[in-house]
Length: 165
Image 1: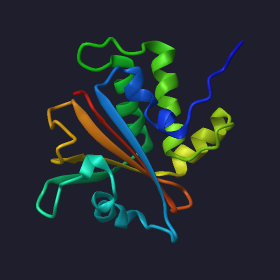
Image 2: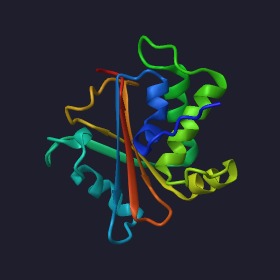
Image 3: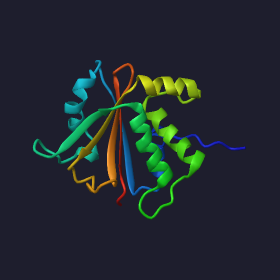
Image 4: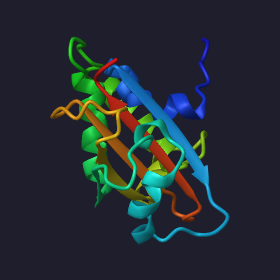
């Protein structure tokens, strides 16, 4: 039996890839000092990411803190229901790919068991965002951004997904 080892980018983008979304990107930033959760909304649009590129100071950037369950719902729907013109990864496979995204975003160790991943997910501070940057198409249910501040507050992982090419 062969197993494929996925890199961090592939793990973070697992849910939109499984759902056949048009485009998804992932970024991971490590900081020199702890980042308080209330600083993330102002910090995120300043990071070097295509999903906020060209936004400027007047572009719309909406971000809200969300519980892990809400992020799970977004990722599971992305993987299991699929994007426009794609059937998605149904049942257990949709859960698997959403789980992989959650684990990678929360910085759970690659060899973590389910209990360890859940602990990391619950300790992570989650954000959902939308932006008027050109990377997004800004159509209802067609794109989103997720940011995860790790439990040690020194790592920010971002997933941006859009159901356009």
